[in-house]
Length: 424
Image (tube, rainbow, N blue to C red; front, side):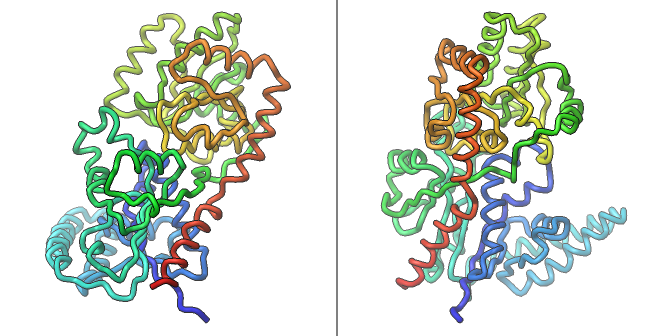
C-alpha cells in the first residue's frame, strides 16, 4: 500500500460558513467544495490550517461534514489552545460571559507566543500545502520540502477601483507579492490564466493549470409549483407574476443598473405589465446607496424591481427554476458560478461576452456586449418570445452543466500533486 499524501489545507475562508452574508461568495464555495472533494479521496490525509483556530474549531463542532477533520497544530501550545477554545465555546453557549472573556484573554496571549514560535518552527510530515485563495504563509513558504499549490480566481483588485481599498483587499495584494516561479497555481478559467500571465510577471506560465469549477451547491431543476410558490412568498415575490432573475453580490462590476434599465425598456416596449425583476444577493456597502437611489429614481416603475437580499442555499434552486430567464451582464468574472447554477436548474441565460463567461456558457444561451442596451433588449425578447429557442437553451444548458463537476476539478489537482511528488 502506497503512503498517503499528507496535505495541509488552508481552511481560513471556510470559517465564512458561520455567517450567511456576502462573504459567502464564489471563492468561499470553491474552497468549501474542493475541501469536501479532498476529504473523499483515500490517497490523502487532510489537515486544516486556519489563521483563526477558534473559528475553525467552531466549524468542526457545528457542521457534520467537517467532524472528521483534523486541525494542524504547529506547536505544543496548540493542544492547550484547542482545549481552552473548546471550553470558551461551552462558556458562551451556557451564558458564562465573564469566564468566556477571561479565557479569550488567555487565548490571545497564547496566539501571540505562537506567532513568535512560527519564526523558528520547521514543519515535518507534510507533503503538500494547498491554499484555495490566500498567499502561502511565510512559515510554510520557507519549508522547501513542502510542495505549495494555490487557486487563482481573478485579477479584479489589480484592474479597477478596488485596488484603492487596501484594507478590504489586503489578502489579495499579499497573494500577488507571494507569487513566484517555483510554486504551482490553478486558475479557475483560461481567461484567468491569461490575465495573471499578463499582469503578474513574477508567475511562471508553465506552472499555471486550468481547473473546471462547478456550482456552489448541488442545485437542480424543480417543477413542483406548490413548493416554488412557497419559496416565492418567502421572498415577497408575487406568485401571479413572471420574473427575470439576477443573483450575485451587489457591486458595480455586476452591471446591475444596466440590467434594470433594459428590463424596464423591454417590458415597456412589449407591454408586459405582469413582469418583475428579482434581484437577489447581499450588497456591498459602498454600492448599496447608488443602487437604492437608482431604483428610487424610477418613480412608479420602482415596484417592478424586487430586492430580496441574501437567498438561503436551500431556496436557490426553486428561484432559478421558476424564473423566465437569468441575466448576468457582468463586466468581469474569474469564472461565473451563477451562470452554471442557472443552467443546472434549467434556466436559460443571458450573459456578457467578456472575460471567462463564454467559457462557461458555450452555445447554451445568449452572449451580449455588456455596454449595449440594444443587444440586451434584443436578447430578452429572443429568450422570452421564441419559446423553441428558449427550450433549446434549457436542454443544452442542462447537458453542458454536467461537464463541470468538483470531482473533475480535484482530479486535475490530484493528478498534478501526484506527478510532482513522484518527481521529488
